[in-house]
Image (cartoon, rainbow, N blue to C red; front, top):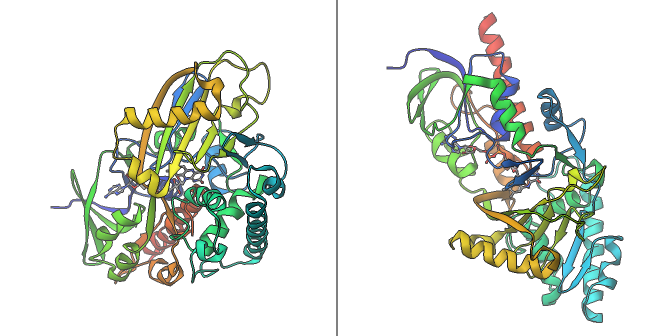
Length: 441
Ligand SMILES: Cc1cc2nc3c(=O)[nH]c(=O)nc-3n(C[C@H](O)[C@H](O)[C@H](O)COP(=O)(O)OP(=O)(O)OC[C@H]3O[C@@H](n4cnc5c(N)ncnc54)[C@H](O)[C@@H]3O)c2cc1C
């Protein structure tokens, strides 16, 4: 027996679902999140002045939706001022200077330098084309990024593979357009979607939104099915059922697909074809009392290592005043290597990551205070060739009564928090308009 009928139920409490709930907070809304906390792939824990980060860490700048939501909650982001395009190959660490000079400065053979420089120029030209486009879904959608780059010697291939792992994919998996989009994002500088850090850690935003939403956001509440009932929808969850005029499904695509199947079959089929790769992160707490060689570095690609990226999460606190003792790093691996290592124990993962961290920065040897592993099986969504053909089935109101809406980072060719939030907002605006029309009818 289903008692009241809600205006809207939102399924999933990641950035997409939270942005939708935030926009609809003046309505009769309830958000159901399966996990024990809000935020999905945004997650961090406070450690004194520092924070340990496990998921998304780079925020978009002022004028973005996410930045606006953070400000509304009284939170502040700061620009990342340290190097974001460092690279370490063997014992050579490059953390300053233009990327165009890397082929000359890395320990590569003359032949490899030439191939690397040529591939780099090819990507740069494609990024320029990418920036000129308004519609990007079908850009370079018919071949893989590996095919776009062409044959590469192993040392150069390692470098581009490491970059692709940031999209949780291998070179022979992601589309050329997605690979080019990834470089556009990383080279985007201050105006890009990944230019800032949230003071206090990225998890403070979902926590603050959750506090404001109060009882409208429920955790530990997995949705099992959605069924149509007349012009309404009934959401079956662990604790019972809720009837709603409209539903926004903001779960990751593999979870969303079975939920929407009985109401929007074509969308379910498209959702089940979207591709995700794994991320494995190790958050490292350090206790040094003196400056570290990476104090001016935010992110460093580490091709050929067990982790693909070294990041310095304490960087946001190093901008002014005396250097605070201690620190927080996040090391992460993406794609097949991450998926394979994930089944190992935390102890083994930590040991392997820390061994390589010490090789990279020997100063870290005696200062490790703790290390926490986080496994993201659905780490990020990336476009495979042919991805653009799935888009029409996902867009707009769905179902016979046009009362089902999808939101999630998978609408973008590469997942990010701003894309996720915008899809939540777009779904919420459709819901809001229909709710107003129904109220005034
Ligand atoms: C290690 C890592 C680093 C990243 N770095 C960045 C970065 O620096 N910048 C950036 O912009 N992006 C980054 N990303 C990507 C970013 O985190 C995601 O694109 C974004 O957070 C996705 O938001 P979402 O709401 O679409 O999905 P999610 O955050 O995955 O939220 C979906 C939610 O739905 C819930 N759910 C699933 N099924 C059900 C169900 N049946 N019932 C109820 N709830 C359900 C899940 O528990 C989850 O909480 C990173 C991701 C990872 C993992």
